Length: 448
Image (cartoon, rainbow, N blue to C red; front, side, top):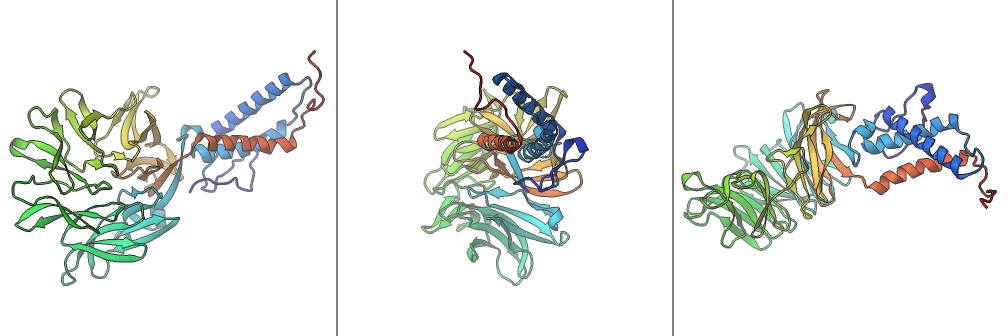
């Protein structure tokens, strides 16, 4: 849970006690030391500013420092300043709640999350929606449902999901869940995505024996690829843009890999390893597309090397990352502002070693959200996993963390703006004011 308020029990530093946030995280002594330094600096400034000694609060200072230290700990994380300085971390669900495992979550612009999880000792699997502070189960593998696939989420909190049915219970289905209302979209198909208009993309065997991708929405069914035998055979169905465009990879003669973009008309080529195409390799696994139709994919350019590339219309550019950070393939998420989250490794010059973590690229720089080795929920992070829809337009990131004590958790990371951090600091100073006697104010001597 996010630390939201200072507890009633104030811990005095001189007594060797600690102050706890509501999650049970201890105030970091480095934060305490920083607050003492801040007060010493303010004290020295006020002595210079006015003609008489004006602050007498040594014993009181410790108590106020405890309060401020707790605020800093809540703001910066359980390891004080060593943890992420700009994200608050909230546990949405954990193995401590009775779950046994988690699939990677997807997030929308409402900070709602959808994810698959095991429960009942791992005997059952379900798809869960976290929305508006409520966690609810959408479907599980009981009754007529034999198997549960994945859930996709749009910005209206509508969930699309696929299920396999038990023998005699009918064909496998793709369904939607719309605020308590279930609807079967199609049968015997494989789910791709759902966009904000409620259109669902899916893979299917098309009439004539061809395999391809389609979309179905209020306007009817659209064949993206697979209408004829001459169409490329897609290898993986992934995300869909707001207008129903779907990116996909396909293999051609001689092992050539080509990324296409389809929306019901002629296919557009995004990138290819064909001679003269500019790429020696392309990862065809789930290319990423944002709501505006900008596509990101992993590949190796013949001139720029390996990495993530952004295809915006006819322009392809390699995504940039801060020096010392190496992105990990199949982990990118792209929002409408062309900000992107990803798993990456970073070189630590102090320890001369690499560590992995979740980063967000925004405003031209890569900001660390959390890394392996960070303290979290009373333990230490040992592994992190993300989906290709892990970042929303508000900069929030959803991920699964595995902890050193064996626990796992679905986590929501929310950016904390600098003004909020400053408010905590100034709020602490205001706590000090009623108890601090400042001589000379209102009776200052003339400098002339």
